[in-house]
Length: 304
Ligand SMILES: [Zn+2]
Image (tube, rainbow, N blue to C red; front, side):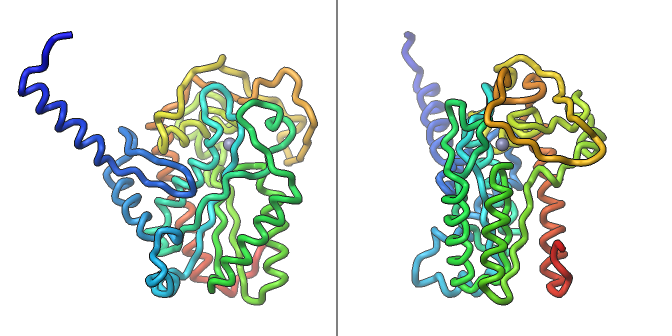
C-alpha cells in the first residue's frame, strides 16, 4: 500500500467529514440516507420533516406542536420478503419516505411508522417476513388511532405501504370513527396514486401494468429512491406479467400457499432510483392534492 501524500490525506479527511455530515433522517426505525437520487429539495423536505416528527418534540413544546398541526400522518409498513432485489423493509421505507416529504407541505405531525404488521400466507412463508396475526394488528392499530384522537387530532391521514394492512386498517378506522364523534380518517395505499395506464404513459417499464406487483420494478424503484443502498436491481430473473382470471373487475383471492412463486413479480432488471424518484414526485403531488381537498371540504361525505 502506498503512503498518502499530505494533499491526499487532507482530501480523504474532508471526504469523511462531509460523509459524516450527510443528513440521516431517522423515523419509525427506518434510516434514510442522502443519495444520488435524493434531490436538494428532498433533503430540505427531510430536514423540515424532522422538526414535524411528534416523537422528537420536547415535552415542553408538545402543546405548541399539536396546536400548529391540524393533521396527523400515520405511515403503515411491513417486515416482509420483497424478492431478491428488495429489502424486507421496502413497504416501511416507502411509507416513511413519502410521509416525511409530505409533512412539511401539509403542516402535519408525523407519527412513527407501524412496521410490524400482518403479511398474507404466501409471503409469510419466506425468510424476511415477520407477520403479526390479523386480530392483533387490528387491535394495535385501533389503540394507536385512539391515542392520536386523544391528542386532539380529529383528522388523521393513514399512509399505507403494504397490501396486507388494508383489511385490518379499515376495521380499526371503522372502530374509532364509531367510538369518537367528529373523527375522520383518510386511508390511501400509495401505489394507488400511480395507476397502470398513467405509469405506462411515462414509458418507464416494459411490462403492461406500469410495473406494479409485489417486489416488482415499480415498487422497488420507489424504494430505491429512498434507500438506494438497500435495493439491488436484477438479482432474480425477469418474470412475465401475472395473468388475472379477468381484467374487467377486481377480485380478491388468497391462498395458503403459492407453489413455485419466487416471492416477487415483474422485471427486476428495470429497477432504477431515477425512475423511482420520478414516481415519488407524482405520488407526492397527488397525495398532497387529495389531502388538501379533503381538509378544505370537511363536510363532503366519506366513502359510502
Ligand atoms: Zn410491498
